[in-house]
Picture: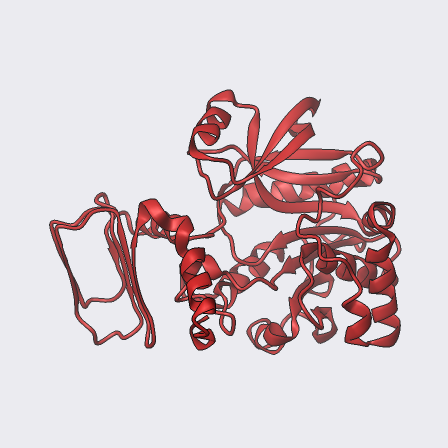
Amino acid sequence: MSRTNSHHYAIIVAGGSGTRLWPISRKELPKQIQKLVSDKTLIEETAERLADVVPYENLFISTTTNYADKIREILPQVPYDNVIVEPVARGTTAAFALFSETIYRRDAEAIIFSLASDHAVKGNDLFHESMRTAFSFIEKHQKSIAIVGVKPTKPDTGLGYIKIEQKINDNPLIYSVEKFVEKPGLKVAKAYLDSGEYYWNTAYSCFKAQTLIEAYEEADPAIMKGVKAYLSSGKQADFETVPIKSQEIDIINASRFPLALVAASFDWSDIGNWDTLHDLLAEVGGNPDKTVGNGQQYINIDSTNCMVRVEDSKKLVATVGLDNVVIVDTKDALLVLDKAHTQDVKAVLEAIKQRGLNDYL
């Protein structure tokens, strides 16, 4: 298959605020436009990863008004009009409906590969192979929706899972999908890992634009009605009529629009919280004790499995006898976190909101 197929498009979904990485990731500076793993922002790494399969003229960004200018600055190689901007955040379904209709109006034969802006991937060749497999599958099954899944390597309670059903294809490996499960408890996640019947949901999906539009119109006519009204008028009020539905694939009638899982083998991390970022940085740094500190001004005495991230490069930080702790220091906030409570950062944010301290969000 040609890597420059004119009907193949990719879209990077970049509207989220990444609140589980507070206090580094904020509403005004979310994780996708920060340099968390390398000297490039996460969205830069994502765009470069796509460029070997989809040319920049067919690469789109889905975001909201508060991030659009910054993203255009970071990715000047992406055409200006390829940044599709929601006037106000209405959840992932509204975002998918808007970019699918926008691209469909440019190319009625468009096949779209969508992915998040803030993930880390190792093994670009394997990633490209999965992309091409997804495109090829949708070309042959135009009413289907393909989702990329990766085998779990641990019982992660912060990720979504997909249960596979029947094998559709051997090489490359593709399954039909039985169900989605969002963020199971630890006992259930361990059972999923042991069963071999579940994959992590990367939230990378591939579909014909026309198919997703039809699927949404069937699921709830108000979705596409509001999007089409907004594209005609440009008025935020029209976009605000789109119902808020967070799960962009779950609402689809799978009997009419079958779901397939493309089994991928690249190393993947969604960098969704401090635990996953710590694991990733420890692996990159080759640290056997998994203690990670940014800069030279960090002294570790008998601490293990700890992560220290300090915004002020001149500040000296020392840890003594700690285990399983994350310390994040910014100019206006300090987080000290037991990694067993990584998912509870959202409780901190709720407390900040309740106290009216919105400048810290």
